[in-house]
Each structure stands twice: as structure tokens, then as C-alpha cells.
Amino acid sequence: MAVLRSTAEKWKEVTGCFLAEGWGLTEASPLLTWNPLDGTGKAGSIGFPLASTDLRIVDNDGLPVKTGEIGEIQAAGPQIMKGYFNRPKATKEAIVNGWLNTGDIGYMDKHGFFYITDRKKDMIIISGFNVYPNEIEDYLAYHPKIKELAVIGIPDAKSGEAVKAFVVKRDESLTEEEVIAYCRKGLVGYKVPRIVVFIDEVPKSTVGKLLRRELRDRE
Image 1 (cartoon, rainbow, N blue to C red):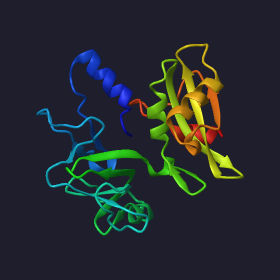
Image 2: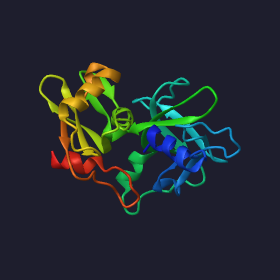
Image 3: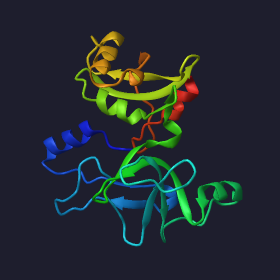
Image 4: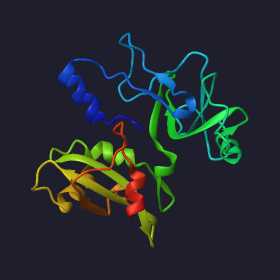
């Protein structure tokens, strides 16, 4: 998942060093991209593909999109797995014509830098519009009274889905109305959380990755 801008900025503030972000997954052994370490890296980017690694962005039909357009990132290279053990159906779905479907949504800029927008399975569809939880989390993470948060989509009879935010307070005075009002200042209307719930801790994996799936399962 993408590093929050506030995290990268805080890292640089504390250490004085640029946070060189990379990207990969288990099926790619695991690294696919990395930012240059010579000072030319871009904050918010996952960098360039590694040597002998090809990446492309495709639409829902598996066709490459134009530079700057958002789609699923596919990868090919010597580090890509041969398949899932004793799971031929899953392998066939994951690797198509030599390209690994990573399940990550992103884009490439005109300079060849790649960016992660979000996980495909975490995308929220509201009245036909694609909404990426990471964008909302990225914005809300700057709120001084918020320590941690996670955003998911929940069923909605009118719009198909709606945004629900789970927030860990940094300041106990924080209210649901305050969170929603803050979002309305910087997000378009359909991206503003419909519901805000305060929790003690956001579920994470052993490496600190948000587990939105657990929150969806609770719903």
C-alpha cells in the first residue's frame, strides 16, 4: 500500500533523509520497483522498475492505458512466481499471457515514475465513481487530532456504496462532526465519509499494513 504523505514528511522532518519508497509483493519475490537513491527520487512515488522488470498499466479489459491514466499494474520479469502451489485456477487468474495481475491500482507519470493509488479490492464505487480509500486516509491523516485511521466502503441503497471511516483519536475532544466538516473542506462530496466510528486501534498486519479486510468483515 502507498505510504501516507504525512508519514513521509514526518520521516524527513525527524531524520533529515528522503524516504525512498519501493513496491513489491510476495508473488514477485518480492521487489518490483525502487526509488533512486541519488537524490532524484520522487516523494509519493514507488520509483522505477528494477532491472529486467517490465511494468504496465491496464484497464478492466487488460488493455494498456495512456501515460498518467489509472489502472491495474501488471508485472513481468525473472522474479515473478511460476504459480501458486497446487492452485492452478488461482494461478491462471493471476498470470495472464506472462503478466502478473498485482491487484494494485496505480499510474505512471511522463518521467517513468510509478505511483500506487490503492488496492483494487479496496476500491469503493459510489454512484459509478471510483473512490480510493488511500486518498481519503491521506487527507485525514493531516488532522492534528487523528492518530490513525482506515477507510472502507459500506453498502448503500442509494449510491451502491458509501464511505465509512474508522478513526483512532489523538485528542479525545475529536467528534464525528469535526471529522466530516474537515473532509468537506478538501474532498468532493461523494468522497466525504458518511459515517465516522472511533476505535481504539486500527487492525494491522505484522509489518504494519492496514487490514481493511478485517474492518469489512466486521461490517
